[in-house]
Length: 128
Image 1 (cartoon, rainbow, N blue to C red):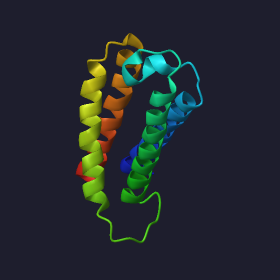
Image 2 (tube, one colour; image 1 turned 120 degrees about the vertical axis):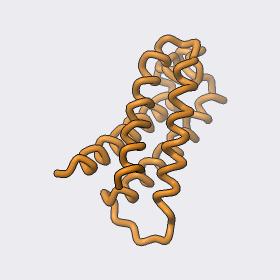
Image 3 (cartoon, rainbow, N blue to C red; image 1 turned 180 degrees about the vertical axis):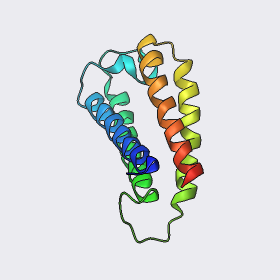
Image 4 (tube, rainbow, N blue to C red; image 1 turned 135 degrees about the horizontal axis):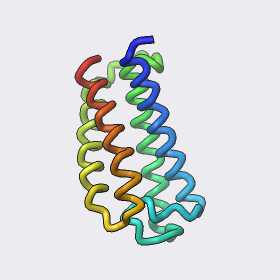
């Protein structure tokens, strides 16, 4: 199996894991200190809604990279390279934002996670 295929699988799995994390926040699991500034152990309803939107966006990102890398066969005229590039740009901004979080849990868990996702996505965008 080629390196880019392995990285593509890892990226798709990471997007799914983070989407699942957001869904756990939506249903009230006490993981709020790892997200959205870490101000709440259990997110209030307003922030749970935001986590729900985040989960949907992450699933779309997952689909974009699955299609872009050929893991998911899609016959479409959508420019997946451009979409993957935009997502990669978002991930670098997300990594920087997590780095400045007041929550130590968010800073020390989510910053490296989004940083790894950024680097892997950057590799895929540059070399596929």
